[in-house]
Image (cartoon, rainbow over all chains, first blue to last red; front, side, top):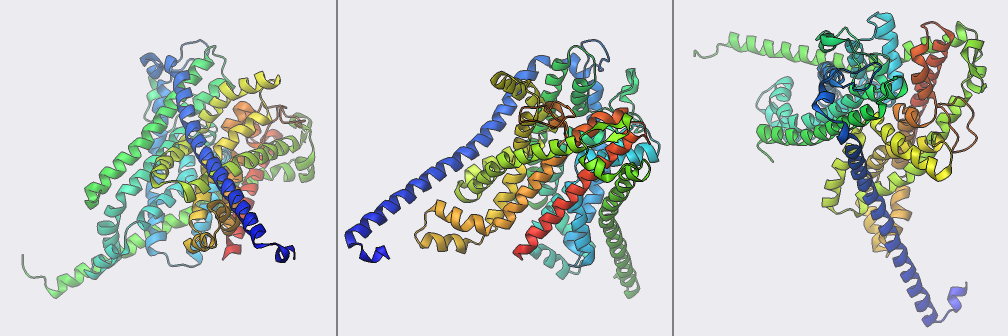
Amino acid sequence: MSEATLSLEAVRARSARGVRARRAADRLATGLLWTAAISVVLLLAFFVGYIFYLGVGAISWQFLTAPPSEVSAGGGIGPEIYNSFYILILTLIFTAPIAISAGIYLQEYAKPGAFRSLVQFSAESLATVPSIVMGLFGLLVFVYYFGWHFSALGGALTLTILNLPALMRVSQEALASVPSTLREASMALGATKWTTITRAVLPSAVGPLTTGIVLIAGRIFGETAALIYTAGVSVAAGKGAYDLSPFRPAETLAVHVWYTHAESVVPDVARIGNGSALVLLAMVLLFNVGARIVGRFLTIRFTGKA
Amino acid sequence: MALASPGRLHAAAVRAHRTEFVARTLLRAASAFVVFAIVALIVYLASEGTKLFTHDHVSPLLFLFSPTFNPDANAPGSLVFIVGSLAITLFAILVGGPFGIAVGVFLSELAPRGVVAAMKPAIEVLVGIPSVVYGWIGLTLLVPLIRTVTGSNGFGLLAAGVVLSVMILPTVITLSEDALRAVPGSLREGSLAMGATRWQTIWNVLLPAAGSGLTVALILGIARAIGETMAVQLVIGNAAVLPSGLLSPAAALPTEIVMDMSGAQQGSLLSHALFSMALLLLLIAMALILAVRFALRKRM
């Protein structure tokens, strides 16, 4: 109403004020969004710096190789590092074939329909199950029902189910990144679907697939809650700690950090925690850098494209 | 090599056909295993998690709403853990949620290509940091800091809430960035052509248009927070009491499970109560997944 009675100059002045205010708001918002993003990066840099600062004094060859101590100071983390890798490898042996197969089926074979929706929905549901809940499921099945007690195998099988959805998703995304012209060309040459997948699609997808698997491997390496009541919180004494058998309690490094702090009576909890946290973080960084390097190498090797 | 006879060609085709069939069946079986896994999980946990009600004859209402947790005295009330879990999750989503969405907006709308390329691996590392390491940072840095600043003992809801706020960031950032990128460019162009600033476009056009995707980002952030165990256990103080404020020590469902399971005899009331808590967490996770489905369906 009042707009109509304003003079042209007043309207111009008002709209100029509006423009200035809007520009100021825009600059302010831009500044805030940049600040938020930069603070995430700074936070990460700070975490890494802090953990290195805490842990570097605790690291020695003795610490990395010696067995843990139950009561006195000076315990190492040798068997825990071994168990972390042992369970990681065992988990990947189980989970990778299932997850990649399921990924191939959903991406290459399954037509939209009830079965595909059911599998997708199951995978999404499985992905939201908290790892402590998965740990109790492992306890029920592998410890109580199969009677394995705490074992590396029970821990690895629990982690297999826990990581199935993430690995499946990685496989699906890797396959989806392969251009469909490749499939069409292969089929046009008379190849069957399976030949097309193994000879044309998978070689092109192997780079991103490997990157994804190694990134997930980093997460498996640091998993804790699902392992406490499946693989246990102890290692055998002496040489038995490096046993190859999957039917033995196998405390991993991440579990060790928690267990030493929460339950153990050794006086040097802080030193062990600081050193172990550094080893865990260093491994995660290695897995992350390694994932990219290996993925890129394989992509070039198999497709000739950088 | 002799020329392939029609018979040999036929044999090769039969072989290829058989391989195709076997491969297809195996791949389908692997997919079916995913369904089998979640069904087995639900069945097992539902059976063990309801023994508290069927075997020990505890009323589900008492389990959910009694603040007295003393399984030795037949009183497995879990209200304190439920309240603790809800409080830290709410804190995390109120603090980490907007922050994560802001970074998602930045990555989708503002960031130069090089900055995006640099930030993606950083977020990937944040996902990869084990939760005990987050807990360790909270324990050695955040708890003493809160102790110095406030004079409380440092352990409690605030410490747990802050740690969770950081831990849900990667989930919220990645999903909200995806949600914003999914908004058609024509909406941006239309808004800018009308003379709107970039911020006006983001606020009035893009955020509402990406609404359901952002809701999903927040829901999955909640799912990440409510199940987190190790990091929370190290900083929350593990006191089975109803929290009186942000600084009071508390306990949450996952932390109670991980603390007491080692001392729980199989078949005991305590063990049954802990499995009921695990079942409750599972039901919450399922409800959140259904909420995600609902949020996405509305958009269709």
